[in-house]
Image (cartoon, rainbow, N blue to C red; front, side):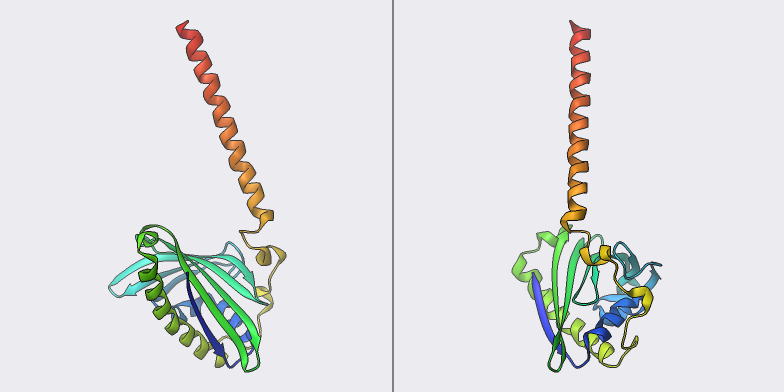
Length: 199
C-alpha cells in the first residue's frame, strides 16, 4: 500500500469541504481530467462520481464510489478505471498544531493493477500522490469550497460505519452462504431425480 503524508495549513473542515464537492475532484486527483456527472447523494456512502482520466483525446471514462464518509477523520473511496482495474483510496485527516495532517493510502484491489509488482506500483503511486496532496492542500488552504461542510454533506451513521463494517458485511456474508446452500440443495435434488430416472 502506498502512503503519503502532508501537513496542511488549514483546519480539517476545509479539507472535507473540498472532498464534499465532487465537481472539484479533477482539480486535486492526479490523472483525472474531467468530470461528467456527480451523484445526487455525494459524498455519502454508495454515491458515485463519473469522471475521466488521461490526456485528451486519450481519455477513459471511469467512476469513483464512496465506501466511507466520516468528516471528523476519514474518507474512503474506490476508483474504477477499467481496463486498468480498481484502486481503494483512504484519506485520513487529523488536527495538527499548524492546521491538520492529511494521509493518503492507496492500493490496487481489482484488475490488472493487482498484477504489477508491489514495489513498482507503490513507487508510482507514492510519487503521484505527492502531487495529489499538494493540489489538495492548495485548494483546502484557499477555502476552495468554503471552510465548513454544507448541511447536505454531514455524515449519517451509515456513512461513518462504511460498507466494510461488520454490521454491513455480516448480512452480505449470510446472504452468500444462504445462496450457496440453496444452490447445493437444488443440485442434490436434480441429481437425485436423474438417478431415479436412470434406475
